[in-house]
Structures are given as C-alpha cells and as structure tokens.
Image 1 (cartoon, rainbow, N blue to C red):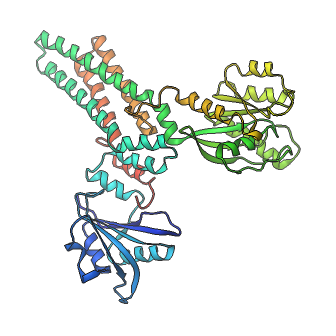
Image 2 (tube, helix red, strand yellow):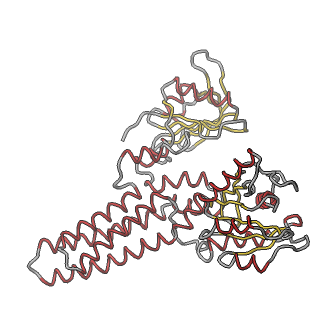
Image 3 (cartoon, rainbow, N blue to C red):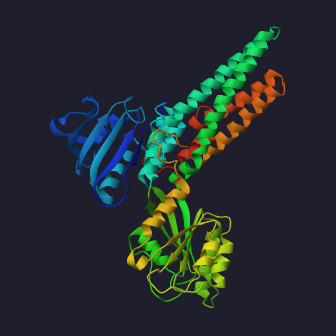
Length: 461
C-alpha cells in the first residue's frame, strides 16, 4: 500500500530543549535531503538505517541556515509506520519548529491528519486496531497502573487472546460445515454438536472473563468522576487540597467560599480520579452561589464516586440528611472531618445513615485520616482484582460493547443447539460472533469507523 509523504510536529508545542518533526512516506529521504546539510556532505538516503546525523536545515530558496538539527534516518519496513521515516530534532521553540515544518511542507510533504502516523502503522499491518487505540491510552495514562494496562494492550496481549478465540470459532464453523455437507451421517452430527457446545462454552467463559475486568479497566483508562459534596465550610476544599497535595482551592472559614465547580486530576493509590470540588449545597440568596449550588446538584447525578463530607464540630442538619438522600444508591464514602475540634455531631446517627457506605474520620488541618481515605477509595473499586499483572484488561468502551454483543451471539448459538435448531441457523450466530471479535482488532471493521477513531489522536502521532 502506497501513500504520499506526511509531516507533523510530534512533540507538544511550546518552549523546550528539543522538538521533533516527523516525516513518513516513500519521499521522506528525498525531501529531507533537499533541506539537510550534514558533515562531509553525505546524503541521508546513503546513510545506514537507524542512525542519527548532526547538521543544519537549509532553506533551498535562500541558501541560508534555518536551524541546527540532529536527524534520525530510519528505512522501512523496520519503523513504526513500516515506511521510510525521518525524525528531525531541532530546538524546542515555536519559531524554530514551525520553520522546519514549513520547509518540509514547501518541499513535497503534506501535513499529517490527526493520528495519521498510527493509522498508517495499522493499515500497513504493523499493529492491529486494538493496539493502535492503546497508543492514545498510553499517552493519556494518568497512573502507573493505567500505563501498564495500555502497554499490555499495545504489545498485543488483548489481540492475541481475541485471535485465539476467533480461531476456536473457525474450528467450530469447520465442523458445522462437515455436518451440512454430510447430513446423512448421524455420528458426524453428534460429534459436531458436542464440539460446538464444548468450544462455544470455552469462548463464552473467556469473553466473560474479559468483561469482568472491564469496570477496572475503564476506570484506569478514563478515571473516576469523583464529587466532593457537603454543606458549606465542612472542609471540602481542604480535602481537595489534601488529595492533590497543592493549594488548588481557596480555604477559609467563611461559608460559601467555593462558588463554582473546581476540577483536578489526582492519582490515589493507582486510581485516577477526576476530582470535582463543588459549591456547598444549601439554600442561599446569593445569586452567584445559587448557580454554583445548581451545578453541584448536576455533577452529583453524573458522578462515579461521592465523597460526602460532614463536620464533627457541627450538629447534623436537615441539609446533611437531604444530601444522604440525594446520593442514595451511589458509591459513597462518608468523611467526618474536623475531628480535632469538640464533638457536636451525632455519630450514632451518622453511622446509621452510612450503613451502606464506607465511613472515614479525618482532621485535614492536622493531616490525619487521609491515608485511611485513600485506602477506602482504592479498595472500593479495585479490591483484590487489579494487582494481577498477567491479566488482560479491557478498558476501551468500544471493545466492551463489542464483547457484550459477542457474548449475546455465542449464547444464542448455544441455546440454538440445545433447542435442536438447524445447524446452518446456528452457524449464522457463530459467524456473527467471529465478526464482532474481529471488529475489536480491525479485521472486520468499516473504513468510516477507522477514520473516526484515528481522528481523535493528536496531530503528530
């Protein structure tokens, strides 16, 4: 498969020591040689593959030096895209990196579309679709655990398992074909039904095993939407600052200080949290604070985890009880804060209200109880499941949906056999299962979906 030669900046824009501009395609060496002048005048196309060369980028129109560079020359197919690849390392300023890119575009390259380098790696057979999607998961990983899951998928752990399951289904289909071709032999039919049930059961169990990891995998990939909620001045902003280990929110003893929703990503024992500090939920005449309270109620409905904060030195109020009612049926950790002050809260009532939730006591002023809270968060979602390093995790929403569909079709096939459905009808469900699993790795996926997936990548990837 031949494509034109593309170029893009592959490092974040801004000031830094180094920036990288990447070229990929059949004309990569030719375009680079028009601009690069190295020591001794040696051309890049004559250099050994996977070597790096010091020199300058020259503007061919003026003959002037545009930038001092180090150029990596890599010849296909032993590259990420399986095409010839040139990577130009230049100084990491906006002017210098854009000047290099513009010269490449003026001399035969085309600006790459978002994700086009990874898309070419997929289309050229370097990686499958699930591995390509893992590239973005790796870039966006916010914890070590999330990164390890993405690395496992990028290295083909999920792909190998899916290919194995598809091979099992192909073997089932082969036996079904024998049954259809030789219907007069009863023993063939009996053997086919036995093998079909045995192998289908194996495929079903493996799909179910993958789906059991999906909650943890999805959390690692996307993070938990976590809302800190409570009446004003119970310590919500102090809790945010304790988890973030920075002073992100204004902390005062004035009720209603937080007027809006403050958002921050934090890593709690390997659990990525998208942490939202909300305005205290109470009735207020302040129009600005009232808007903040309404936003708080809205994010509450969309949260994965609620951190409900109470004040040890205040009596439990009707507003507190209403918050408990608002979060009924959700994953909640109740935090009784300000344990360093005199007790006014009715702890027996708090325990009664919290009987379906985890309960933690803290004194954020004295930095006490934060470890217990972090442990409660980690155990609530990952208790006993996330430490297995040899497990294959499913974290992608698209993959989860396809696995659920495949589970339904394999179930229908097995039910068909038990009910005595004609074997050629059962074959339709088996074939559909095979196709659905193929969509995960890109073996049977529509071109428009491929375009949509890669459009979500950053420009230089």
